[in-house]
Amino acid sequence: MVWHQGLGDWQTHGSLTGVSEPAKVPSLSESISVTRTQDIRREGSVLVMAKGAQLPHRCVKCNKPAEGEPWTKKLSYNHPAIYLLLLINILVLLVVAALTSKKATVDVPVCEFHRAKVKGAIKLSWALCLSAIVLIVCAIGMESGGLGLFGFVTLLVGIFVGIGRGRLVYASKIDQDHLWMKGVCPEYLDELSR
Ligand SMILES: [Zn+2]
Image (cartoon, rainbow, N blue to C red; front, side, top):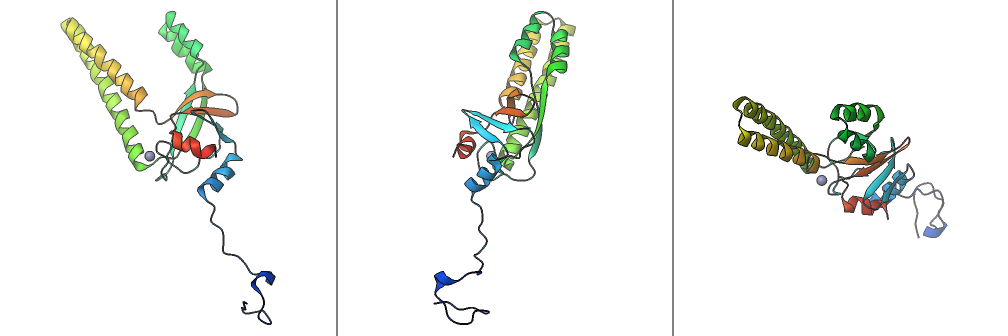
């Protein structure tokens, strides 16, 4: 039996109408299902999303709750065949790539640990590449083959660090409306496929 102000007499609980239930807090899977209606899905190891859709507020690298503002990333994609132009001329490749690349901007949720880790890798990559240029210039001035080789290896390591560690996420395809995004951890993708 229950009674509260406004009721004339004690009534059984099931007969009550108009008594408000406590507000229900949406679970993570419910909030993701709301997001899914904005078109975010998983295709194997790739996250496919409509351009402009908002990603669930979990770190894409570890699936823990994201911290701070999402990291706005400008992603671009070129068809792999375009790199055959490298056989002709790197300048031709760069011009055609600039003219034909498809672009998308996405707000990527991330935790502080992974934000710092990726930023550190970007800085290391730049430091290695700039050092490599100095080494190569010095090698040319000193006509030193050994120093030139060392500069070239440093450049390769710098590029490797930038591509391997310095990318939070990257596009494996972009079309008019959608973005195919790689670099997202399996746990985050698992949540989307539930
Ligand atoms: Zn994280």
